[in-house]
Image 1 (cartoon, helix red, strand yellow):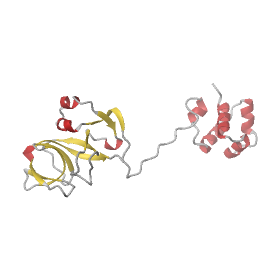
Image 2 (image 1 turned 90 degrees about the horizontal axis):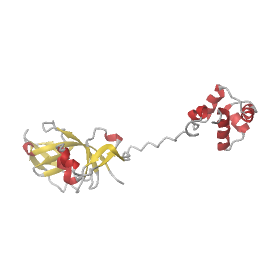
Image 3 (image 1 turned 120 degrees about the vertical axis):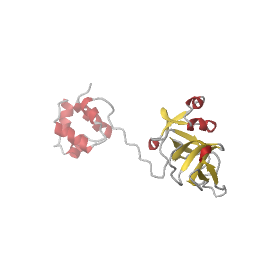
Image 4 (image 1 turned 180 degrees about the vertical axis):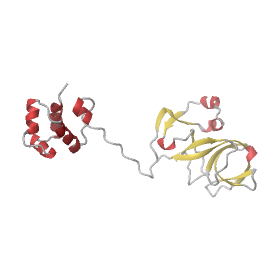
Length: 221
């Protein structure tokens, strides 16, 4: 394995610097580092610190021990606030439930859901989500478009509705993605589409089999 000073020489060569220019950049006297490289002698820790401070791209572990890569892995860019979070497939991720299995997902009927080979996605922004489902149709535009993926969290039937929030509701009318508003009494709710072409309608709470709160959306560009 190469010595520390040999690795310093390797890095200087990779940068295309003259040894004199490198010495000047870290404040070393003329020839101080060059002689150590040519004679393969050690350099003081003060110069190691200077190198690491001046050239943060250098992997300090590699420089001192020879392990790993010469350069640090560059940081990944942070997505802008208006960009969708990065999602990637993983067995440990959130299951994407097909449309015709949504009722099973809502009722936690794992047997029904597991009949499908669900893909799983890790979406750091949606850590509280229990499943993902695709949006179908245009009734919730412009909030949600057909093909969008919404992240959902299951709720008990006796939950206190947060008015004007969007829920996925498995009911006697099928599985619906709608905004919920207060009904005429405590036994009813009003389901509202964001698309004004669809009229709101009343649903009796006793007709709800299961429900989930929509906590986020992933949209393809």
